[in-house]
Length: 290
Ligand SMILES: [Zn+2]
Ligand SMILES: [Zn+2]
Image (tube, rainbow, N blue to C red; front, side, top):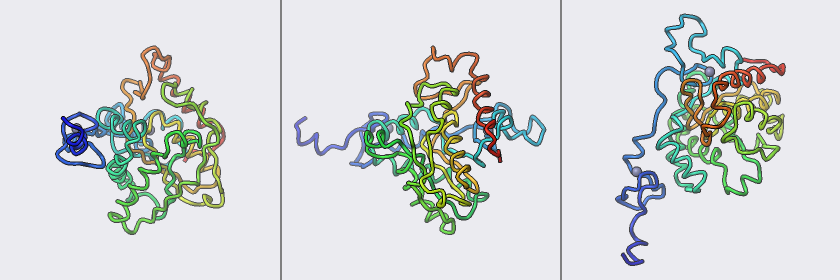
């Protein structure tokens, strides 16, 4: 194949390698877009985690809450996700973040919009949309904040589908004070310690009594969402809601995260104990759980 035909042919699908019929800004084939894993079964009414047992089986008022949310209610009202962080979803997020395939943010943002739309019936009519920030060193490294890109595209969709919902992008409200180590590969406790004091609010007056919709690409253990939401609540936010594109799925007490290795102590039989400790520590600093 000569150089000219190489230049004119569309690149193959980033996710499966099959040829694409036409040039596309987001080189992912139609089949791959239909194979993004959705969350199965019943989900916790607060954090959106898959429930270990059907909500109707436990027969109590808190039956639709997972054990973490029952023990330590998170500082956010509710978290929703579009899909599961595995398979095509994981590959697409990696393409966006690590291969910097930025056009993928638009279709992924449309997926995020579907998750946010599930909050429309119960969330406040006016909210500040706050992407979880990157520290400036990582932002300089990557060149963009994927959470901000996803939020921007999601809002484009929601402005049309929910014209009465007043969602205002506020990307500079929350700031990352420290260049935290990557959360990947850390245990739940490690994630919590890693995030301690990581966030601050740039202008508390802009947040006070406001309803916040926090946006991120992945919800893993919830440590980031809890830390960021707590920062907002302490700055005076009236309520914090969370929407992410994908969430890591916990299977048999294990949370499958991007770089957890079998020898990681976080994946030992102590995982659940550690996660409980994490949850309880988050609720033991005097902040009002609501
Ligand atoms: Zn494909
Ligand atoms: Zn929960």
